[in-house]
Length: 195
Image 1 (cartoon, rainbow, N blue to C red):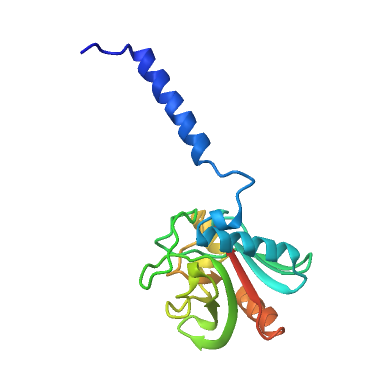
Image 2 (cartoon, rainbow, N blue to C red):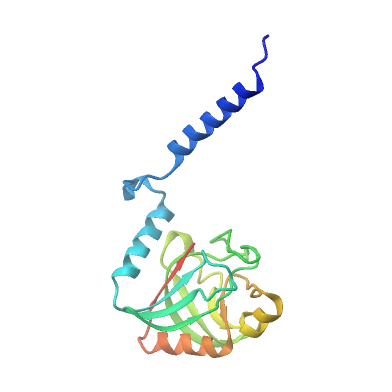
């Protein structure tokens, strides 16, 4: 059997990769029905965020933990912008893995609704109810807003990143109080968490 020259193999591999990339890259013309369920829900959530004038909480886990990636917004007005943790099994600085499974200690994403406020092991806390396929176990997993020392600017200055939670949205004590106050002023508000 005759061997192919190295340059021919390289050309075949590069061409194959280019074809694969073209076929597998999402088209801007992709219809919602063609997307997986989680992607359809995330697309709808992004559209809802840009269209609403209601008070909402937005968390962008596409940003690293050393950036302020939580916003409380009302229309175009930003009421609060702060740091928020992600789950300890979701990545060190960036949130790279997500799960809706009990015991995963990962962050989940999607649309949530704020719920009961209570005093728990982390002090003042607020439950959330998952409204999407990607976060439907949030209540069972005890995914909540709570305060934590590892979610403060002091921690960030010392370690260069926030600590990580078991999947909860942990912020500083001051910001946690403010988030809960802003949510309760409206009774219950939507929370949008993006990957």
